[in-house]
Amino acid sequence: MEGVNAKTLRRMAALLGYDWSDEELEALLPQVEKSLEMVERLDALALRDVEPALQYRIV
Amino acid sequence: MTELVWKPISELGRLIAGKEVSPVEVVQAYLDRIEALDGKLKAFITVCRDDALAAAKNAETAVMSGQAVGPLHGVPIGLKDLFATKGTRTTGGSKILADWIPEDDATVVARLKDAGAIVLGKLNMHEFAYGPEGLNAHYGNAWNPWDAHTHRMPGGSSSGSGVAVAAGLCAAALGSDTGGSIRIPAALCGITGLKPTYGRASRAGVLPLAWSMDHVGPMTRTAADAALLLAPMSGYDPRDPTTSVLPVPDYRAALTGDIKGLRVGLFRPFFLESAGMVLRQAVEGAIKRLEEQGAVVEQVALESAAHVAGASFAIVAAEALAYHDEWMRTRPGDYGADVRDRLRLGAFVSATQYLKAQQARQLIRNEVDALLAKLDVLIAPATPIVAPPVGQTEVVVEGERHDVRSSLIRLTRPFNLSGHPVCAVPCGFTVAGLPMGMQIVGRPFDEATVLRVADAYQRVTDWHTRRPPVGQDAPAAPSPLSSPPRGERAG
Image 1 (cartoon, rainbow over the protein chains, first blue to last red):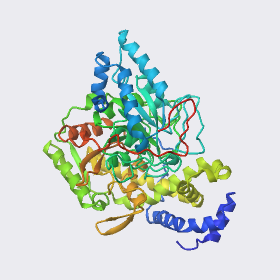
Image 2 (tube, chains in turn purple, cyan; image 1 turned 90 degrees about the vertical axis):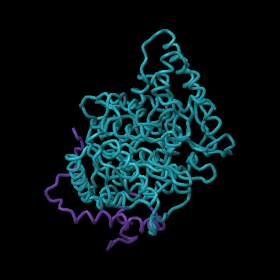
Image 3 (cartoon, rainbow over the protein chains, first blue to last red; image 1 turned 30 degrees about the horizontal axis):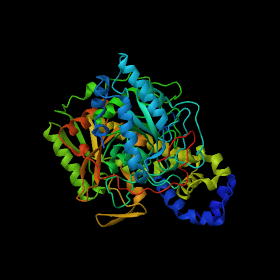
Image 4 (spheres, rainbow over the protein chains, first blue to last red; image 1 turned 30 degrees about the vertical axis):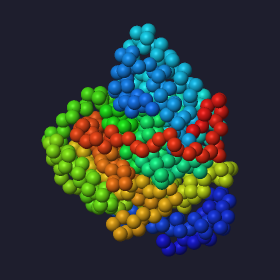
């Protein structure tokens, strides 16, 4: 995934109020990149007319 | 060891109701076996010896005084340690909740107690249910009983439930399933695990991992036993707004053994094709047994399967961090490193990504629904691999290297997204004696058909009757947090 580095993670974590060290974020970076790549692949789906399953009650 | 601990629940209930066996005798048999074996197996976090014996005495009194009793009367069960139990600590497999003693039972626990079940204790699990390996740094790693010499993963997160049922430490157990946490340990431990439809059984009083993906269900040795537990667990609960108002059918009556003409879809791409050769052969062998019983099988595909991982990650990671947000700020050092890292990942999922994942989820559910519009059930392996040794992080399947964690949840989590009911049943053993499992997926709220197929398969196979090679010569090792309150024993 482009554009994600430890600095980006630090900013995002800080925005959420988490005080995570640079070492912790560096160690987390490969997992974040791998996970967000999986999520980005959802963009290949035709989702424009699909309502999200927010009220998830089958019956 | 008494044979009582291996009796199917239906038979155990009959013996108790017929005054042939006392509930006290039954509970004591299980407690003796726990005492002998759980030092090594580490299935239990807390054993409720005194409470269980007191409940057994009351159950015995009820029988002897001629009160009408049901099929679960006096039957000892274990609970994954995220089901709240009034007056008994509920740890969630965590250090953070090591001393939490709930004031109420979870709804399904209360309902099972009302049906006569006796709680033997609280079972080991992956910390806060966030891991399919079933390991736990705080209470010790449960030991898969199918290999007495090599410490293998029981699968998780309901690891203690899988181990306890497989090793004869309880007649049945409850588990929870957010990405496969009932079905993975069921497969790796050679037992039957049922993830009901989302909304079938109440989650009230159950520690959440991801609210919209969590399911609770029974883990048993047979599908017939699962039917006995599911009935009282099911139905609307005002404490859980996602529970359905649909009536609860008679699941036992559905177990006719007749599957003639049943339309079965076999998931080949993504599912069967990602499993190792021996596992593929086991599932294909199971399909043949179903065909011999009159089922009509065709091969099917889930086109959206490639998007399951992304959608599942975004939803679980975001919901899990939302639940753990306060503790992640105030007590981050009290989490195991693996769970803390997984929780941190949720901070990097945006609201947009979460919503896209929920949109993708709807597509996936629609696709499974469309398949089940023309088929009665769908079949897939439960896991693409058998139980790996503890500490192993990669596996090689058909020459390709895979991450163990991703492999374990690969084939189960599509149905947490879709919410469909799934029963995992043992369908074979490797040459080394490790169990393999397959999933039977049904229409929403059609657990009856899922259980009918599972039961019909178990009527013509004996995988579910095998016993693991565990004995009394197992060495015990201490657990760091194994001193429970209220005089109860930690295993």
